Image 1 (spheres, rainbow, N blue to C red):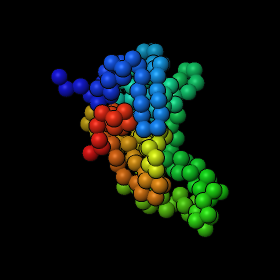
Image 2: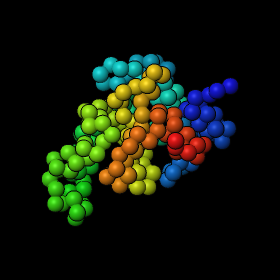
Image 3: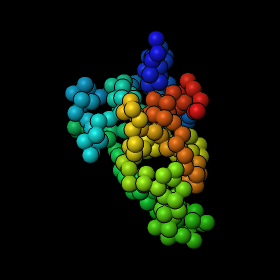
Length: 179
């Protein structure tokens, strides 16, 4: 039987009593979204959620702070807006970044993306791993409807790190290594 990465993670966590250890976090007591909420939840532009995210939300909607409100909505924003938030923080706290305006820093990051058009895509910030940020990037879905997870090292190097949210989960919970 060939289970999706998300299903493998969920099975692993269920076998461990609904508990899991991620990179820097302990998780317990999963709180799933109800089926009706999952069925009505879409991206803000009405695209369907990727299968891996739907599967995960049926298991837990609290550990990664993916959705908020009633009815729940995903906490997605355009990647450019996320980068702007990062630049505001860096220009105030990192002396080297103070030499740049917020706009210059955002444009430098956009230029470092694997595809600069990604800056306009919706993204969902995921839990980081040490010096790496992770963003589920709703840019171009593969044939299975999955979207990649963008990795960012020290906010100066960007690459497509995982093929899907399920692959991110699998690595996060120690069941696999990234490709």
